[in-house]
Image 1 (cartoon, rainbow, N blue to C red):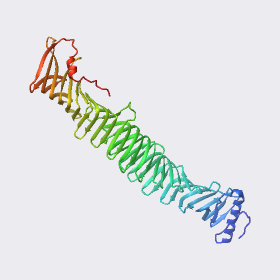
Image 2: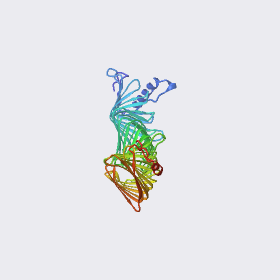
Image 3: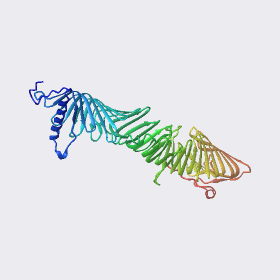
Image 4: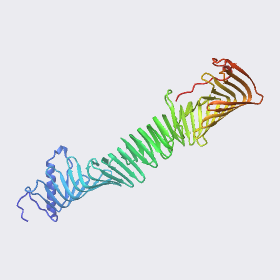
Length: 508
């Protein structure tokens, strides 16, 4: 073989001695360019069919055919490569990289092009890139791999596959040492029927934890979770979420400034600006704290000056309610602490309320009072039955009283031990008083003369129409008297002593 220049070497692989010598010369050349006190890992040429250098063509050494390079624990093979004087390598076609960590875990990469930089110990890999670590695969147009850090980074949309899970994102970093992936930019995770959308998140493959850093939506196992940040364990289906956080599932909606959820037990809690609604979205409850545990929901307020607020939009008239604590168990609703409610022209208040939504039966306790139009009813206990979301039947149990306006200043007054009231279209129609009944009724004749009818009876019946009394019937040994009054009379002192005073209707 005629060798005219020492700089131009053509080495067939069969001349093994020359190959070994060339490799040694390249290693010495690279080593001489570095500070002996701060030596870097250098790229070793482990094999090639041809190694040549022609300064007239290029300032790089060319390696052709079955190229094999080594750097630490990593091995790279390709069809051809260039080695530059600064120690960098540019490799082409059928690029394959095999790397083993100190713990024995292996990473593999495939591409059509790469640049190896021994100074930064980074490999820039491009064109149909595929990275595999155990059962974790990244497919993307390009990525960078750190030989020392064992990390992968990409800035073009990538697809990451692990079993049935596929993650796509615009940018990301993955460390095979920590098994943690950081992904950002239109992140989407699809696994069977589950889907996650996020602006930025991290996946810890060791403990199956999902960390959310920006606005995210999780559609998993029949539930839709939204938040600005949070943490979710896909294995236990437990997590916490914050920043306009919410979960919507078959039970309804639970939202707040922050929430915690346990999907396996269908449990959750929420704090701050809480909203809870049922599956039909007809009933909405707002408060400071909410808990969904063992099939029941509780909503509370922390500030004594505020209220738990309930809105139910079923039927023609919207039901509104304020209280301190609201608890729901399937079709049963319980309210405690200063309960006030309003539904169209029908309203009431008491210390506590229970509502069976299946039978539409309501019990109001603790000095309850109920208003229908301008009529007021009070007793020790009130039982109501709703029809089409309006009062149908009402029972006043114990010390029952009814106040019905006679004019702007006077009220008809009825009292007794118990009272049964019937309604038509939500308006008072008929009243039956039983046990020590007393009636104070005012009337005006054609000459504008006012009279008062006072009576006592064991059983009293009254009929109403258009909000006015149309008939009073006294049964079982009635006693009474009839009196004419002056038009300027305001009320009867004896009536005030005998009967409970009318209460002011609260505002919601």
